[in-house]
Length: 50
Image (cartoon, rainbow, N blue to C red; front, side):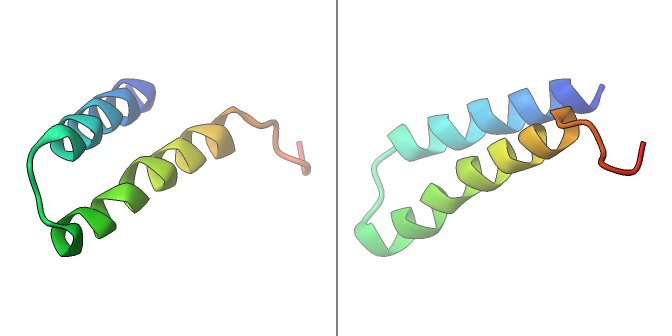
């Protein structure tokens, strides 16, 4: 379920980046996909303590 949410968030962020914004509005939007991808990567890595 969490993978679905992450994928949908990424799709939404990419869609929003394609919309017309000025640079001040667009700049924070660039961080969102990177943060979401980091969450996905962190979930897929095996834990060191397990």
